[in-house]
Length: 191
Image (cartoon, rainbow, N blue to C red; front, side):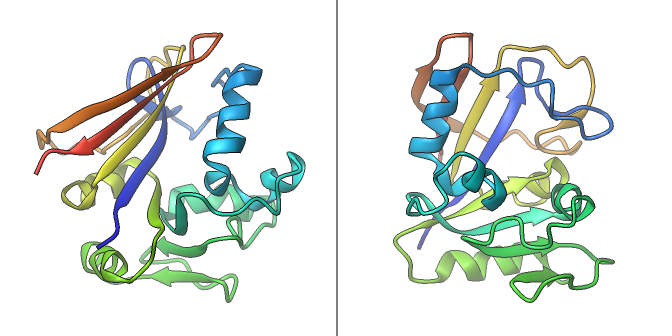
């Protein structure tokens, strides 16, 4: 069985985005950006991979992405209907109609869909891109966390796991730090 990995950006005070879904306040050093392009090129949207000159980089971690409507919407606003064309894409939404044949819109059970994806045979994992409400619904299914901690306080915004109180334990497996204050924390689920 493969893992569901929540690979997420987080402010020091625990927000994944501002109150209006802003993410442009996250700072990053050149070394940190190099790490993202080298270690997690598959987690970058396809148009960003092209921009960074890594559009042919092999998928190292993921072959599938799951996301909520709020995570998918910014791409749609830019006219991008397949933001992760290098991955199999699943968007959970009760109201969105299909925009692209390479993106599967799931209106049904979130947990059952992810469990079915986890049972598939693959050497690569499933990337949970967000948002926080979806991550909260899938908390029991998350096997690993890759938390990209940014040296900034947002003050308010979107939380990483929605608003449900549900204490869940993870082991801290590794911490990487970068010039400028970025850190990446790797956690695995306590089972």
